[in-house]
Image 1 (tube, rainbow, N blue to C red):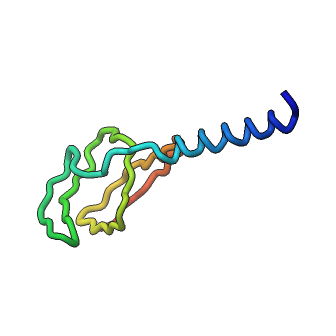
Image 2 (image 1 turned 60 degrees about the horizontal axis):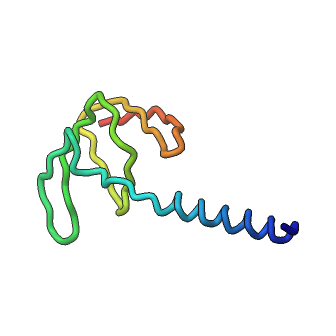
Length: 91
């Protein structure tokens, strides 16, 4: 196998792997334990969310979202690469 062929194979393999990683299907953030749907129409869904002391599966927020916290609290957000980010929410 020539050097060019090896390089082309490696490049093609890299793109295939990157495509497979990006095309992973993650579950939606809601519904889940501790979340209750309060309202839904064609533009918005409102959830009452409690952060239970448990691990939740990795998920993606496909759409924009906003949060209103009515009590202070701490949690740890873990990225899909395993990076842990302690977070504090202030009411």
